View 1 (cartoon, rainbow, N blue to C red):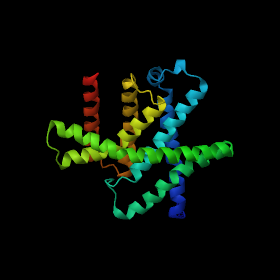
View 2: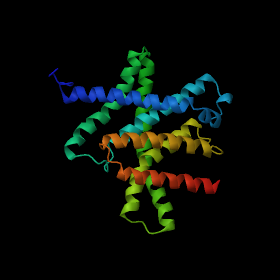
View 3: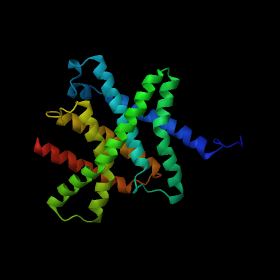
View 4: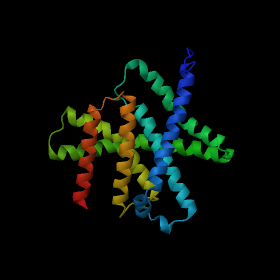
Amino acid sequence: MDKPQFESIDQMAKTTAAALSQACAGSAFQLFQDKSFRRLADFKKLNQVEHDRIFNELIVAHLVLIMLILEAPDLRVVDEFRGYLKELNQRIPKAYVDYLRESGVEVKHLRDWEKLISMRYEEYARDRHDVRVAAMQIESAEKPIDLEDLSKIQLIVPVQAVTIGCHHHVCRGDTKGHDELFKLMLKSLSQFYVDFRVRFEGGKITPLTKARVALKQVFSRKKKKL
């Protein structure tokens, strides 16, 4: 009874990364199974190979989003905790690949997964800059940007960058006419993002309330353009 649950920080990070990777897969599966998502993604016109490819993209999007949360410079955690979060971040891809290995997936496919996660992480992390610039341009078109606006933009950049990229890949680059699909994906990934960021921040939801407001504004603007 007196024995600690984890014997080392390394063991705790390994166990937590495994749990997070499974949470990513579970959330991706829920979105994948969503009837509206399947209708908007034209599943009836796609074969099983395409279904599997889309599911894989959804899983990777969630994995990368968790990684971007863990490395977010504005994540409200004590400085002493950031070293652990950095190690946790680096363990996320391996944790999911290990799960696939334990599930009997062939080694050649495991290497493909490692490459895909790495490639999408680099892509979505890189795209954060363009998303931030675009968000600032939209915000500044209505009024001068203040520190509160910058804080809201910083909060929503990761989920927007991941959703834009994932939407592009789900549609194989042909995103025209798929605005409703994008909004559905953004809503789902935003909920996942907020839920887990709140957990990492120990329930400090006040800054994230602003992020929710900012995301609602995004939906509103897109709706007016349609």
